[in-house]
Image (cartoon, rainbow, N blue to C red; front, side):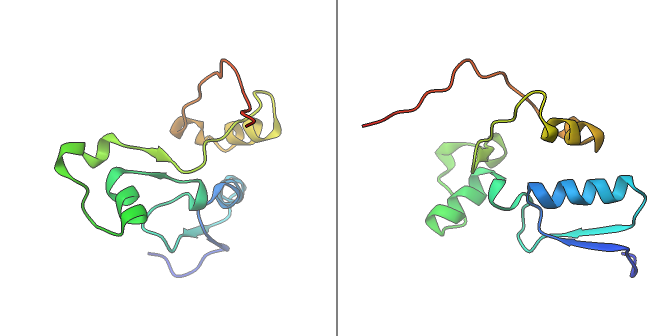
Length: 112
């Protein structure tokens, strides 16, 4: 690993990733780090082992649940406006190749 960087970004939440991408596109040498063993901060996707450890404290879920890699549980599902600033920024930084989008048929609010 190199020893000199123009910028060090701590955390891998959405804001930090966008900042890191923009600085990198502008030609700066960026070191991007996270204290967790996964990326995404609070907006992360967890596989089954990570989710089990986070919720139960155990390292291993039961075998009958299948392969850990078959799971990607979004901690906070997100909505993005199609023509919003966020989408344009994601396209500009070329991270859209790592994302998938799905049209939403409807949005509902439940009130007891």
